[in-house]
Image (cartoon, rainbow, N blue to C red):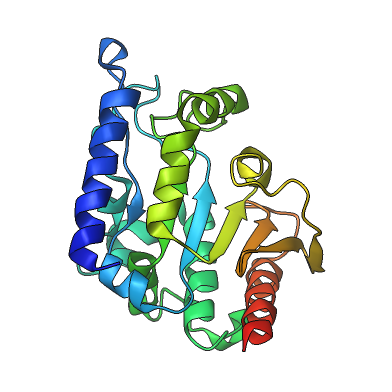
Length: 238
């Protein structure tokens, strides 16, 4: 797809989402997501999409009306965004995505973000989809019923978003159970890759991983297990 064609279709989808999903009476608007730099994203043979739960705004669930991708504005993303409290979520995402897009480098082969801030820029060529587009009502704790209801009501819009972005590497951040029905992944055989499992369908890989801020395994294990799964899948295609 030509980038200009993608941009037009994606804008139309976001406009449709706003019309259908916004709750103006409750002062809640969607926080749109997707990919910051479509040109770089689509130029990669491996197109990564992190499948997430929901975005956050005000503590009472109000707010929204902005883009999730606005976090990736600015010249130094580490200083502006990724050295603060939510770094426990974002650093594993950054290391994993960077490693995959740089010859499947492992955790120990990648510089620390605090020493090389440029590594954080990888988020601009990776896609992000939140199952729930409205601001979280729970802030620190997700209400899974809210997300299930949103997927039931707006599943076709989510599927349209996935189709437009056309990722071939899906990384589910403790969200596989939310998306598996929607994406038709129920009856696939899983393959173990350390702390994660993965599934293959239509030449794409679907990785069932912990949330990036998990504490079950080390950050190194989390990152390397996902990278190993993608490397195995990629090598099988060559």
